[in-house]
Image 1 (cartoon, helix red, strand yellow):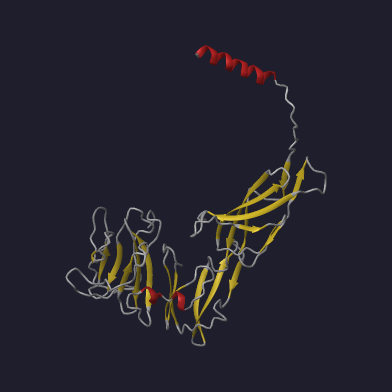
Image 2: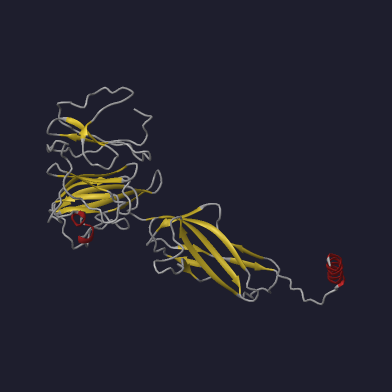
Length: 353
C-alpha cells in the first residue's frame, strides 16, 4: 500500500512539472506616491491651521491622466482605540480626497498619519506613513491670571520658537459664566483623565478644560465632593503616585485636605483627612511635596500650620497623616520646625540640589 501511494505522488508531481499551462499574466506595474514628508513632523495648531499635502502618483500600468484610484487619509494617536463602545470598528479617516487640505479638529498631541491609495481595478493598495504633531493655543505655555472689572481673566503665552511667541489675550472673553475675582492657579502635574490645571476664584474652583481651557458649571470641582457644597474655595491641588493607587488631592481655603483615588470609578472627595490618628484636626498649608512620577510609591509631604511641623501621607491608601520621619541619608531640618510655612514645591530631578 505504501508503494502505490509513493508512485501516485511521483505521477502527480511529474504531471504538474510537465504542465505548460495556459494562463494570462498581468503586469501589475509600479505605483509610487510623492509629496509626503516622511522623515519630519508636520507641526501645526489644531482648529486653526490648515494642513496641506499635495500628492503626485506615478504608475507604469496606466497612461498619464488615468487614475482609477480611491484615497484615504487617517490620523491615529498612540492611545487610539480600534473598537468603539458598541464593539464596532472606529474610522479615523479625515479625508478621502487625493490632496489633503484640512483644518485638524483633533486634540493636541502626536499622531501617526496614513495615506492609503487603492487601485480600484486590481484591488491593490499603497500606504505611506507620516507624522503629525498638533498643538492648541492653550496646550502648553505660560498662564497669566489677572482681574479685569472684578472678573477673572486668563492670558496665555506660548513659545513657538526660542525667539517667537504667540499671545492669546483674555481667552475667556465671551464666556457668560461668571467666575468673580481671581485667587490663584494650580498645576497638578500628573492628574489623570481630567485636565491638570485649576483656577481658584471667588465663585469656586474649576478644572480647566483640557482642549480649550474654558471654565463652566460642568468642570466645577464641587461635583466630585460627596456633599456637593455650593462653593469650593481651593488653594492648591496635586496628584501623587502610590503603589496601588493615585492620590488626587486638594487643599481648601479653610486649611482642609481632601483626597480621592481617581483610578477608582466614582471615587469622590469625602471627609477632610487632615486629622491625626488620635483624632486631632490641624490646618494644612497650601503646598505639596512628593516624589514626582515615583512608580514605586512615595510619601506625600504636607505642612501642619497648627503645630508647625511636616506631616506625611504614606502610600498605603489609609489616608492618615503622621509626623514626617527620616530614614537613611541626612536632612538639614527636623519635622518639628516651629516656623510658618512660606513656600514648598518639588522637582522631578532629585539629583540636583
